[in-house]
Image (tube, rainbow, N blue to C red; front, side, top):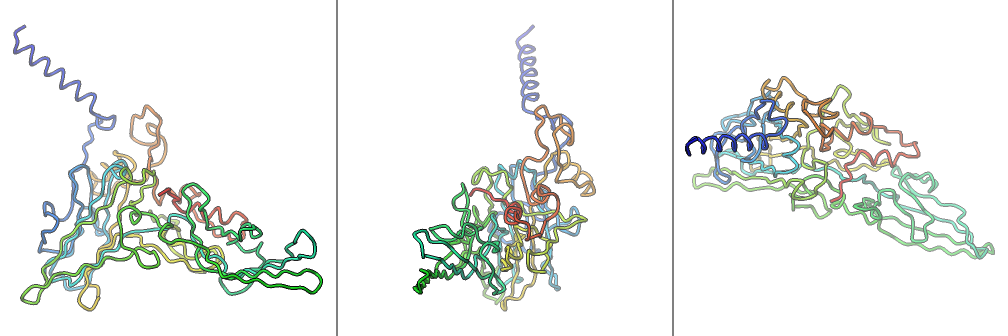
Length: 432
């Protein structure tokens, strides 16, 4: 055998070995992922204004991303610069769950010249842990006639202004603790837990010695809750603008004026840090999409009659005794404003995680007809994968999984003695 033949044979064997070792189980099926970075406009460097429209895309050279508007599969997240009517467009950014864990997501947004006077960017955010207000008033009567003082009564004020026995107040636990009453939203003693109990309260202690001697002590105290520490999502890892009271603030970007009185346009990028580089949690903290099903997550408030079709973590409505809680923001929102702060156009972006390669490819190949991002079950049995480890088809948790894990519906029975625990399970409870 001559040297040339021997070299060719060795090269063939080496290529064969590399191919067999480097390919995953799913790749050997012959399935091919779609092209990388499908979006309305490609190849525009960040910072270079593009003139044809108001749009978003996702820049990536590492993994596959599909970007579609709610007009249907293959429709760009793009509003023409000549559009005269006001437009609200929803867009969906589809990414495989493993890529969501490993890679940053970079959302590029563009305002063409002479359209927007300001561009407003609002991040998606939700509550990470159950949050609420403690009672505003607690009154404790103590019998001090013996060497062992005895609490004879304890009342507290709830959201509607009425008073109830402390034992009947869902916000309170361990009200006789010598260090003061404990709030059910204060998880600061647990690993990764935060104090999410908001508000101040007046504590009145009335001591009666049984011989006509009554003393009253009053103190104004803070429940100590910190709003920012109770937030969840990319605002914990990829956002640094907050209001004075701790909520995520919108970023307003002025668009430069030109000499002729027009605007120069704007092209910027929002980077969302991956789980792998930040929390390492298995909750997809920047996947903000949630599934609307035939039984949507309409939930009555525990006290309020208000309903919402958003997850509890995004819109808790109220707390256990009826204090209204501010809703989060369920989308990455890019808004085109005029000089008077009127909205010309708005784009709401939702990042959707896909559990399996097979379903992701089927969705792409069918132009969106075959749709199943939330495949559940065991690899090799319930999803199209020859799994040798019997692993789950669904490796990372998102909002839809939270609803599934609590039985597919929300319970709103605040009379249940375990109501606080049940409600707490509706939140991601990620250790940040």
